[in-house]
Amino acid sequence: MPVFICLSLIISILVQSQNPQLNLLVEPFVVYAGTTGAVAAILLLLLKKMPEIFCFDLFASCTLLTWFAYWKPDFKDDSPVFFFFPLYFALMTAFVALAFISQRDSIDSASLQQMQRLAQKQRLKPWLVMSAVLVSIVFEEHYLMFPTLMTLLILRFALASCLQPAKLEKK
Image (tube, rainbow, N blue to C red):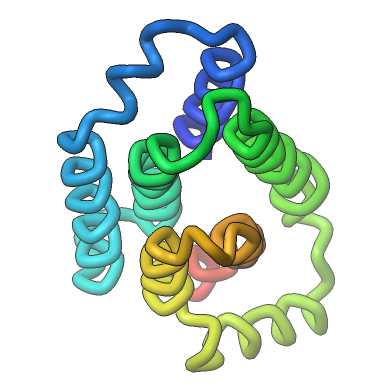
């Protein structure tokens, strides 16, 4: 998810430096555009019109923009949540990519079968996790729900990325 990582780091830097460009990210248009992009990513995933990995990146990036634009007006300007959450997302995604996805060639067949069974479970379907993340944006009073579900989404992305070569080998 390179776009998501870059966008997360850009938002963290802009928030930390109190950049006036942040005012553009809190416009109502960003909420609508981000939500539309996130819903489009879910639909593209369900209809299998785009690669699953691309849908994860599009969804996470659009959701991050929606979250920022929706939450920022209701919090203080110096609230650390807008610096630390995007930074956490970028570091978590980079860690998952380096620690798990880059090592996918060394996964043994037993582990691969367990991962495939886990990916097929109904409660861990990507579109279901994405929907939960999108709905969690509305619950501002439960401010840890969004980063927790985003972490689950990042882990689900890692699972999908690790299984990607296995899907290609079966065909």
